[in-house]
Image 1: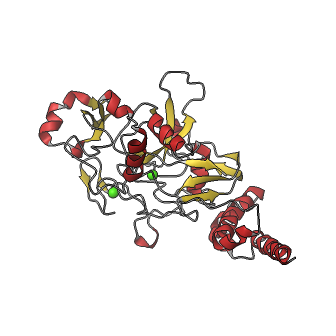
Image 2: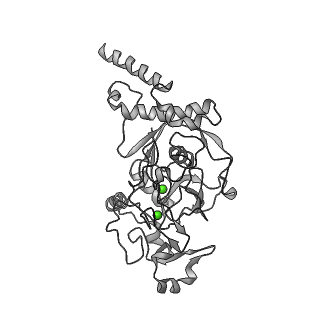
Image 3: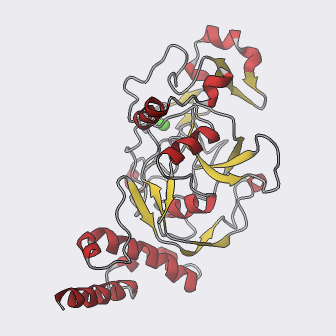
Length: 342
Ligand SMILES: [Ca+2]
Ligand SMILES: [Ca+2]
């Protein structure tokens, strides 16, 4: 009988929370002032439910519907949710239109996968990444000496001459063939292809997030915001993400403290307790860029932008922004995080 009473109390508490009595509405006041509708309420409730789950962990003993906690992951409430935008910055990227997607509850990693985590995977499985098989990966020019840049002039990416294809570069040597992982253990693993990311997530009993899942997680229960925390790039005059400051590509002032990657737990960005969703490294998603692409190495959607993004040429550190790479490609600013069904 005691347990039943607790369950009833809990249901009453959750019900009042959903009705807005727990103060969650304050978090989303600006969202509700946009186009108030049922979806808006759904998205407000997301944060509310998430908070109820996080604040009332002991209720799990009594309330079977609450999902168990998974270390290092956040539970993202599903529902009918908005993705995309009607105010695209890059038309060709198909950021628009805004649309509703229906999602089940799911888990997503709080952090990008780190070098230490990927090293454990490689140690236990002897996995060889695609960059190691191909024998090269793409490096940003400031990681090369002027002499190396001159030697590798013909190995630059057309239309993006700051990228060099460099032999011997892979996840072990993220900053060039003479580099190593010392001091970068908690930084995101890079130079990993989409297939490498899929293999890692599978080994973890997880999977890559779909683009819609990634974007809903990025939005943190808010609606029609540019960034996971809102529309302002630097609330409280603080840096909220690792991107490029100064002139691109020849004058990074490093105002945010990071010329290249930062630790995966550096920038907490939203109410779902997610870090570095935007900025730091791009993140692979499971989606094809074009659903009818039947090629051997189709383009896959990547999200979030990276430490190399600058508003002048790559304003893609927004939740709705998207880009693509072939699934066998790798670079020094591209990593991933995993998801899991709830
Ligand atoms: Ca930076
Ligand atoms: Ca990221």
